[in-house]
Image (cartoon, rainbow, N blue to C red; front, side):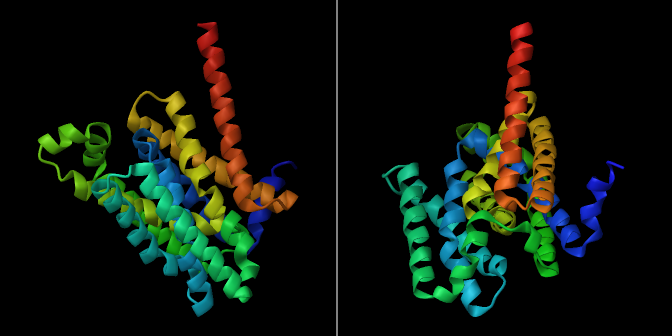
Length: 275
């Protein structure tokens, strides 16, 4: 009798669509998160999400799917941040902070000017996976495939660059090009995830499952796989909380990911203490 609570939600079409998007997002973000936490790029991911707000508003105004509207903007933002970091002397965090804060502020100014868009603000900021359409599922699937295939193709190169950029440059790898490729796939993954977890909480799904996996696994590829599993579990848990308790989907997924991290942290400390 208890199993009906597991499959009952998916008798509805909107829940099946939500499940597909939740699984894709839960897998894609932690795979990238494994690289992000080893290169301390968490702030970069957060900046891309927040700085995409003006593009999302414009997309809503002109009637274009917000993910499609935000894709080129997010790629440009990611490459612009990468350029500023490499060329300016103001420091990485400062360069990211300037773009992040200015574009996020511009987005809210646009929202105040075009008040008819304000109805979607909460969904943009905190996500609403239960409201995804067939088009949203298709776009998320396409972006997820692009991200995962790119990570597979460049796995060794990314690994070399992210753990030893100097050595990679000496070995003849085009470090700057590889950095830009990673920034592009990171921006694609973040934009694909906005409707599920929202602008504010995308960092949680990017970082937290990957961090939990890093506590458990010694190898990098093992941490990527386990992080993806944790991400899927967190996304699906958030989906059930949204359905049964009417919680907002994004915060539910983020809290589920944090709960997983805390369990792993406690288990690791308990095992270390006993040994």
